Length: 311
Image (cartoon, rainbow, N blue to C red; front, side):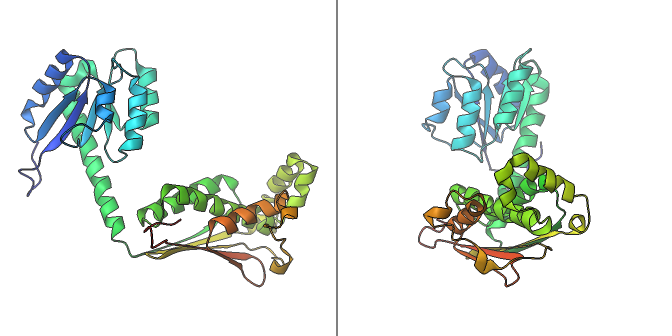
């Protein structure tokens, strides 16, 4: 493999986690033609997780059958502790099910042990390239000073998780918030979009839920396909800067009088179905306001400069 210009002396540390010395020797022999890859070896999963290595690995290559712990547990733990370090698993014949579970748990790729001599180099090479691209993307995102997105979505509730996830990803890329705050903002966004779609565009009152969830859901589904409700859109605008995130959610419904909204912090309203969403939005955001016609909500989350993250 030809190294990129300017990286002739760069060494890539590959941590092999395997209790078999024979397997490690096979890996050593296979990767001998890649002098820029330096192998580190531990026999047990706990050794890989304890952080006693003198050099940080760029990639982990692990067996799923370890002497001290379940390989799946190692994948989960390593991805949680070192999310930027990719994990490649070595599978055994007949272990398709456990390999699939490992990939679902966060493994980046896999290579069958019986194919180490023919598939290992290409597998490691492709994973390292993808990991490097992700690191460069994160570095680039850290240089981003402003980001704006705008959507006009139909009244399809299956779109809501996708748009919320995309907005959360953009938030993480700007490094405005920690993981907990990102989740909280996602919840606030979901509540606001649901309100715009169900109560704004489809004009389905949350009071209907007192009669049970089924009548409520049935009316939503009915109005999704009949005019004038079916042609209305939910408009979602996102503007992120280094200091704050601003979200504007607008529906095309008739609106309402914002002054008629119940105070969600009033104990009498805490058990109200209609007040729960607004309570979450106001709790998770720093600033929340409606326009005069009541068909638009603006939510702002500011960076906590004392921690360099949202609180």
